[in-house]
Length: 307
View 1 (spheres, helix red, strand yellow):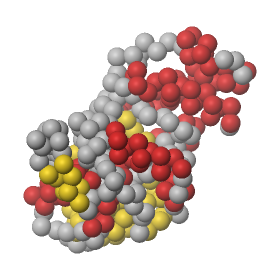
View 2: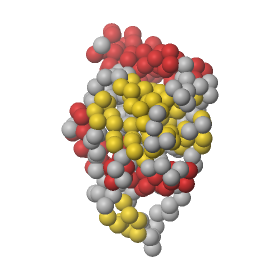
View 3: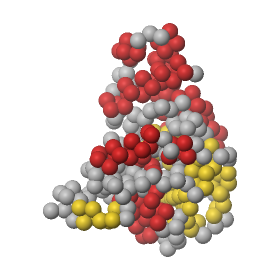
């Protein structure tokens, strides 16, 4: 029989599911830490721990970027932060409103952190897509995501570039969407030379394109290089000390999707034929190829028609 766990305002029977999911902060700059999610699909077994998070310790509190994919993961993140610093968590910046980055927000709200997100996130929160995704997640990721898991709005919606200063540390928050999502944000910490890019960069797995604006996404990757950070923290995969090299995979993959789908999309040729004729050999061995690649190609095919 499983133990009782506290999730989002109530206790929940964990049945026979073992809780083997660990969060391991890695220091990547003097005051910046990174935690890497698993390169797999979200599940009850991994508690939807498929995305990354990071945090910066300032003299006036801790700033977290992304809240992870379930309340239990956010609780674990809060515990790990407390092991490193006595500073309170004062802010959470949301890179974008996808489930694996935001289902932990309610735990930070409980402890009084201010939540910042891009203004287009308001549209997501009020959408049928968000509602249905949460309903499905309560089944797919049970018991870790359940009836007590809520979608949390930002306290501060960012509608233009903004500098957030906490404890004398500047956080340069840039709107870059629509790219991976309509509500993408990047967070650059000049004093640390660290750039949090959310899902603008994927490493070690096939990107999730979904309903992305692939053309805007490629422009956003150019913006990353302009900032010239020492460290890039992506939404998925390992952090990077060689940003110019390590964003190349995401850029090359998006360009290939566009190149392989463009002619068929513009000529209104059948998608299936275009997909079969493309050479996917470079990507077939990469994690989540089977789960994501065909859907990615189809979404790019449709988006090119709409451009």
